[in-house]
Image 1 (tube, one colour):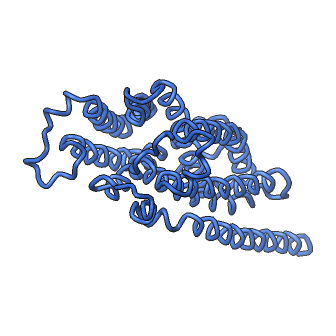
Image 2 (tube, rainbow, N blue to C red):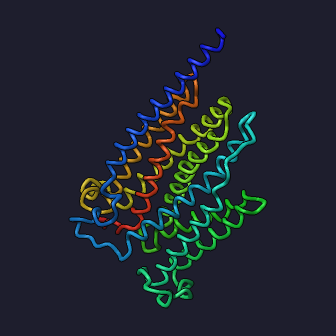
Image 3 (spheres, helix red, strand yellow):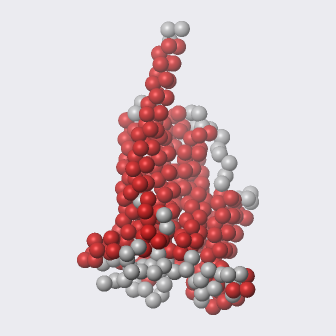
Length: 335
């Protein structure tokens, strides 16, 4: 009886600390999300007063790209964490049910809808008769759109097959197609831009999707030691992913907005405003990631890092939505 009481008290204190940590993490998340509220309402607030005009269906395009990016993140994140789990000594056999098939299906539908927009000359189709499927093969954007549709379809089939790991190849094709689509041949230095986007998209997908999958795995595991080891392995890789995402994001922004015009374009263009909101969100995400890493290293129970990590994944979800909106807005003019 004497030995039981301290254990019960310690367990209660630990649960109390987790609840307190969850409350603080939620407060940070709310403050960060409020900073990006106006751009997240859609393209109209971001375009207000800039003199820029949005293309028809910009809001729908932003939503579809958000779904596409989220699907890519979930599927790549599962593959990434599956490898991490195999490296954890004594890892419990229990794993959460895979979301890859559903994610790839959502990505397929989003890519198909985006391809229909390309097939009508980047206009919202009024009906099936407006869609020129055959014309997709005649343009660069059309071929890339078809590649994304077929790649997500292949990834979905791989996800439900006996070898789900093979979906990495069609998902890689989606990443390459997105990188090429974002930088047309007429752009200055398109290969450099595509390379930066490719690295940015891969690292961001592994970071966001990987953290989501780690939290799902920890929800099934009851062994604190194995859970802490998995979270620690992810955290070490996440540091490199954060550095890569930041570096490629800054370089890409400077290619679109030269240094001498950055401050003005961040407030006077829709692209700049949403980019600024994304920077604010990413700053908050970095703070949450640092908070989780400190808890992981110093707390008696490493799983207390789950609370800020959960807030971090919510914030990353908002970042994905902002990224979807960013790709649908007009690119600023190089002054």
